[in-house]
Image (cartoon, rainbow, N blue to C red):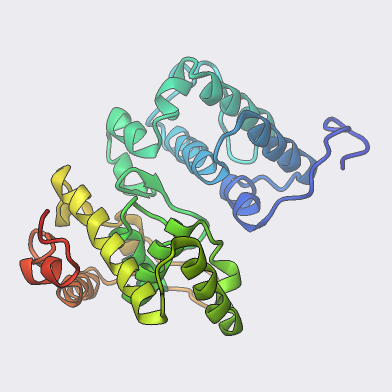
Length: 289
């Protein structure tokens, strides 16, 4: 806990990776007591810390670039590193008050409202903000962000087998972290078989996951999502790392699109529309859709 100073009395178990990055370095906040205060407030309000950190960071950049002013921000001087401004914006978002009503819709809604090219740094896919995993030097993670059913989800898996596996794990309610241990695979399958009354081996488990993932895809397709929605923000293709061991790293758009096309083919989906093919749906017992 914080024992003294402006935020004295704040008690928290400490920031974990995502919160420390998205509310800390992402906003250039290095004040640890202030960071703990922001995390505590978000916990109490029930707000997601990844998306909130993204939204506030987006507004800070738009403010810095002169795309929005203090009037747009209801008088908040939303500068990088300001804990007070961050806390004020969190309260606005939670109450959907003033600018908070728009900000509560996420960076996609904000960038549509602000315009002026702000979509280039609106770090989201299908309306979901990215977690604290930069991808200029990690094309597989970028592929998972654009193909995940709910948008830029860092939990959905970086390749097709893992995406299928995670889809099934999500349906069981089992945390995927313990599944990294191979020795737990058989007990997990036994547990699932006992609960459902249906025998699951590894192959059936993964086939069920593939069925779930394709069903989610068909839902998205019905709602109008197409290949053009499976896209990353321009920043990852245009703004290279400037420091560190990955200095100069940036995604190659041509290579990324080629990799995406191959992904659709490997999935048995139409590379142009992304609709799951008839043969794939029949294979999975989903040809009634």
